[in-house]
Length: 398
Image 1: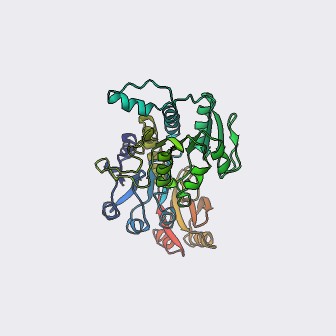
Image 2: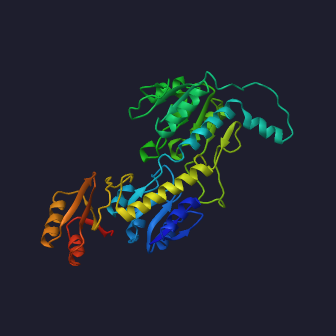
Image 3: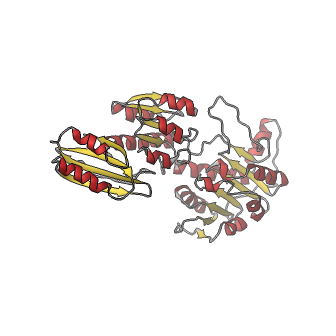
C-alpha cells in the first residue's frame, strides 16, 4: 500500500508506516487542490497537518484513499462529512501535544506580564531599560480560560500551581480541576480576567468568536493569547485594541491566513506592535509532541487498514473488535438508512456464509459493519456485497 505524508510529518510516523511495508512518499509542504488530486493516484493513506485542506473535490478523485491522518489536534481543514460519504476514515491526535501548548501559554503569559519581549528587543539594540513600569508577577492574577478541554484544563492546573486564580468557560459543561471556577458565560470570564487565553475548536461557527464587542468587555490592560485557531479572533479588532492600549500585550500563534510553507512570506497587521509575541503556529511543535503525534496517528492508520478498528476515528462510527482466528473479516460502509444489515445477512445466507461475529454501529450519516466469517465462500460474495443499496465501500481485510 502507498502512503503520502505532507507538511514535514515527524520521522516517527514515517518509520511506523515503513516498518509495516508501506511505500511512503513525503513532502515538506502542503499541496494545492490540483496538486493533491494528482498526487493521490494509488494512495491508500494520506497524512497532513493544518495547512492542507481536504475538499469534496479531492475526495471525489481519490478512489484508492482509505484513511486520512491529521497529525495535529484540529480536523477543521478536512471536510469530514464528505470523507464519511466516501468511506474514508479520519484520525487525529487529540492529546499528544497538550503539554507543549500549555507550557508555551504559561511561558508567554510570564513574558508578556513582565514585558520581557520588549526588553529583549531593546537590549539587542543596545538599550538598557531596567524600569519596572508595566512589569508584573503572575501570582495572584486572574487567568480566564476560554475552552476547558484537554489543553485548557492542563493549563488550568499549571497556572494554579504558580499562584494564579483560574476562571473558565466552556460551551460543554465541564467539571473544574483544582480550585478553578466555572463561569456561566463568556462575558463573565472576560470581565474578571487579567489574562485571557483561547483554547476553543476551529469549527466554522467560531469564526470571529472574539471581536470588538468581546474586547470591550475585557479589563483595561488585559493580556490576550490565541493558541487555538486563527479565524476565531478578529485580527483587526485585536490590532486596534493593542494600539489603543486596551490590550497591554498579546501572544498569537495562529492566524486567519498562514503561509503554505517556510519559503513563503508572512504578513499580519500585528507585526511591529510593542509587547506582541508572534509565533508561526508552533504551539504543539516540540520534538516530544511531534514524535508522539507521528507514532500515534500512524499506528491508528495502520490499525484501521489491518483490522477495521475505527475506535478513535473522528468521522466514522466507532468500532473496536478483537481478531477472530480462522476467519475472514469483511467491512461494509454504507449510508445510514434502514434495511442495510438485513440485506447483508440475506446475502450471507444466500451464499451459505457462516457469520462468526458481526457488529454494526451508526452515526447521523454512516453505518459501519464488521463481519467475521468462515473462510469458505464463493468469490461472488464480494460482488454481491457491493451491489447492496446505499453501499459506500466494501473491503476484505484478511
